[in-house]
Length: 107
Image: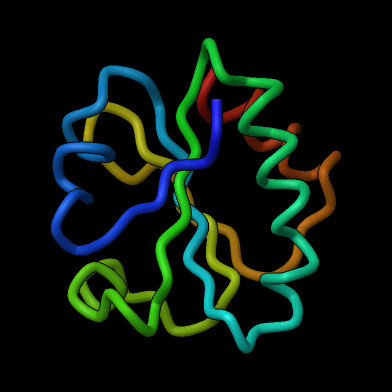
């Protein structure tokens, strides 16, 4: 399954009301570390498509959600389950680190 493109308008439906756990990648086009982890996010979305959903939200285009979750540094990856934040990571994590976090927090 492809990575969801999230925004201020669809965030509630796609993340908070989703039955599956959701990982949201807060990013910006000018952010080097965001570009570095983008392929990893795509790979994880395919690998875990039956168990979790993964979405990306551009912080510049979606200030409401970005501010609501207090995202100050990017990339920021927030793990949601049942509409609640479980944990948040900041920075360009490796695929192994992200997989470990997914297994520990969401599955």
